[in-house]
Image 1 (cartoon, protein in one colour):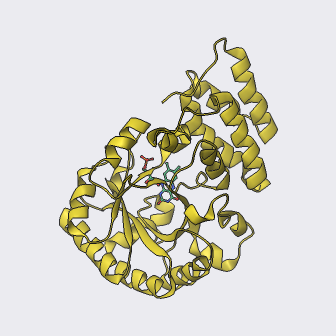
Image 2 (cartoon, helix red, strand yellow; image 1 turned 90 degrees about the vertical axis):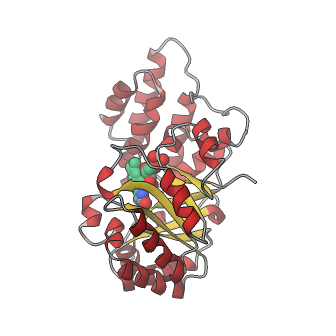
Amino acid sequence: MKVPFIMAPMAEISHRALRELIEVFGGCDEYFTEMISAAALLAGGPFERWYLDGGPCPEKVVYQLVGADIGQISRAAALLDRLECRGIDLNMGCCAPLIRKTGAGIAWMTSIDRAGELVKEVRRVVNQRLSAKIRIGFTDDMEYLVRFCHRLEEEGVDLIILHPRTAKEKFKRLARWNYVGALRQELRIPVAGNGDISNAKELIVRAQGGCDAVMVGRAAVRHPWIFAQASGIAAPPLPILETGVRFLELLGRWQPPEFHISRARRFFGFFCDNLKWGNHVKNLLNREETLSGIERAWRGYFESVDKPISPSD
Ligand SMILES: Cc1cc2nc3c(=O)[nH]c(=O)nc-3n(C[C@H](O)[C@H](O)[C@H](O)COP(=O)(O)O)c2cc1C
């Protein structure tokens, strides 16, 4: 049986418009949302309804929560548990200084007891699948990682997603997938792996051994057809030009105007890597301040190149 393919949580990227686009190509098995702040969710911020939009396939959506306060996270998790979804995820891996310094994200990995307490409280109020997305930790210490995960397992986490890098590594060093296999040997619950998959072939190889599910982040923005391709679904129905235009339409429809430009820049920051002159196109698009301006600049680039561009892998 094929292991599930999962779209990673990525701030300003993993929203409904991208899910809609990936579904055009055949979809994937699960979609994590970008991290949702527990505090903002409880405060009922003006944009929360956009973060909570699980369309077009809520049954495949996993809401990821980020926060530093156990009470806040469990109250927010209780709200999410009422929605139709595939599960709820706790962000215990984000290394962005603004997140980590508040005690959120990977800061949870500094204390096994505190992380255990968090899971215990959240488990009390969540009936749906509960997962935790983590990294190796602050240092390269397998023994600590195993103890940390054993505690999460004891307190009721159903799935661990391991992005096998330490806190400091960012994307500098390659993800150490051997940690995924090694961790899986130690736990009763499933372990998903994530990191550095760049095309459908690599996704297939990772899915063939050593993990219970495979999560893909940046490559799924560059190649929204990656999951379909790895599942043997026929060639993408849309060329690069039309895929970009379709994304802009979806962004206009499924995200609030305040998010349009930041989200378009995030998407094209990766998607332009499909083009020979990708950096040049990124710069052109970044000068634009409206979705229609971005579309004009995007189409303009294709008019200026003399050979048709088709999806690359
Ligand atoms: C722009 C960006 C935003 C991200 N935001 C989140 C996030 O909100 N929550 C999270 O757990 N990880 C986040 N990540 C990490 C990814 O989920 C993933 O672990 C990482 O990109 C490695 O996977 P990849 O090599 O397939 O991209 C983010 C990564 C990127 C590049």
